[in-house]
Length: 129
Length: 129
DNA sequence: GCTTGACTTGGAGTTAACTCCAAGTTTTAT
DNA sequence: ATAAAACTTGGAGTTAACTCCAAGTCAAGC
Image 1: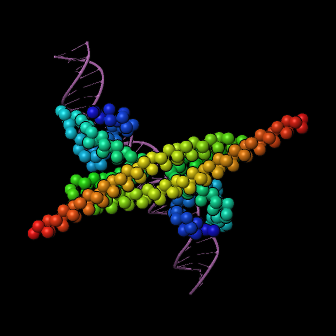
Image 2 (image 1 turned 120 degrees about the vertical axis):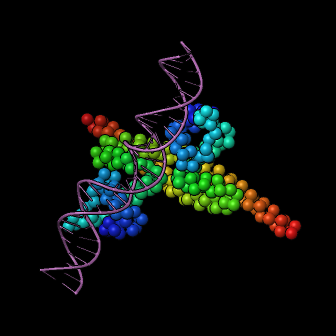
Image 3 (image 1 turned 45 degrees about the horizontal axis):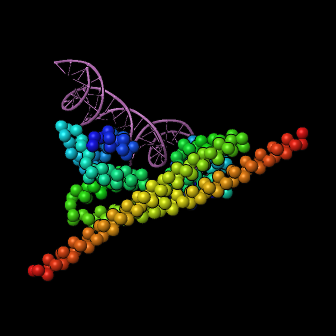
């Protein structure tokens, strides 16, 4: 798979894919004549990275994780700890977002009744004339 | 309440509070001798803004919302629409984050069993000798 | 064999959201 | 009344995460 196809498949710019590779968030992609050929292993990894990015994990965190990964099995415990830390802050963020959602829903509802009320008043005004 | 107290109460920098006021995310705060005095109305607003920011709403969106607010009742419908749009993208983000959480949990579990396995192997090796 | 178009690289530029700074004013404690 | 502490302003600087660009390579169609 070429970079262009990957870019389209995952809705991510080619620049970003190259950027992630350059800084080590993605492992070096195999080339043919210097051109990147993405295989299943690469695609799986990209999917994971994009999922984590969408959830708000920093590029730097993913970088650190991948560095440990490159260093081999002995870093498994540290990698696991990173995942646990990220999991915890993800849960916290989820709670904050649910709180925000609640507030938004409430406000939307207040607007709804406000606007309805105003319309009613307008109607009555229409009657008076 | 002074800016410093607000800053401590909500864990937000004084600079950020001034910044939000400068760009119009917060209404102009009443002054005494040029010094900001935050009242309940201001605090409520700050809490709302911080909650929305924590949930990922952009400063620009909040700015736009406040501009409409300043323009009076006739903009209620537009403001409501902003809230609805933000609500929807919030829900989408929540789903993405839940997906990421699932993946993280899975990976953490995989690491756990991997590490356990390795420890068991190490023990056996110890036996062999 | 030459042009077209997709690809490569390193590096500069952009954007959002702060964050810091310098220079000045005001309030408070001595 | 003066030194220190806390505040003010406008504007410059920083950071993360891209995003764009120039200059060059390479295979494919005419």
